[in-house]
Image 1 (tube, helix red, strand yellow):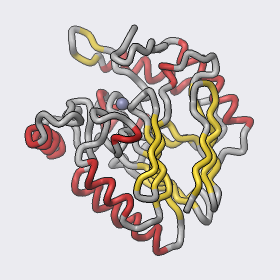
Image 2 (image 1 turned 90 degrees about the vertical axis):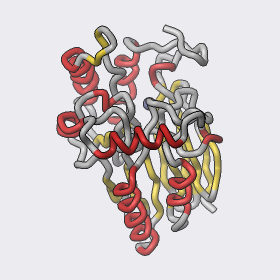
Image 3 (image 1 turned 45 degrees about the vertical axis):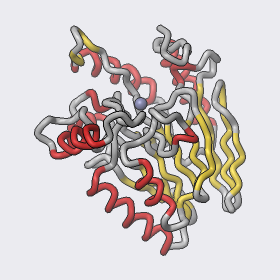
Length: 272
Ligand SMILES: [Zn+2]
């Protein structure tokens, strides 16, 4: 299958590549493994998502990931939420409502945000469905105002502001992980979160966020803005390397070292 960027996607081979990534993580001294979203593509029958077939796909991936001997942290992607959200959160063991944080060390806090909290892929009766519909109407014609993107919403934004204020007050550094990129420079104008300018301001406000890690834009990308390293990790299904695309990330006081495997880009990101 070919997609707009003329990149072939290797759906079936992704499972074998994931097995290799799991083996590599198990051999490493990684504290945790983060999956950056879109664990499934979503199987459609006559234009409607087949829950049964999509769950079958999800179970296949989770069976490979069950061999991981590290804590596994999931980030919700726009394809993930093609499945009903409540049961998906339970299956993936994601804390409700879908965003959370973990202290990785005395210095580093990992904050996971849900960039599809406001999305059309929600129960139509949920207020975030209406919020997504209104946002798309208000921003019609803007490149990122796409059905497949999403946003945080007011409640999650408040939570993020609070946790970042606390992180700064504790003298900690934060790395924030979400599925959809926040700045166009690390993605493309179509591939950023709803309300991206506002979210960018929230992340930069306290000075404690050193990096934002995302997926969604399969080609990957990078930008340094407002003191934050925005890293968009390359997609495993596009990887034409037997090792796929994954990375080991070392969080240090003075820099973040990304050691890419397969088609994943390696980077040394200085912390100012
Ligand atoms: Zn995505």
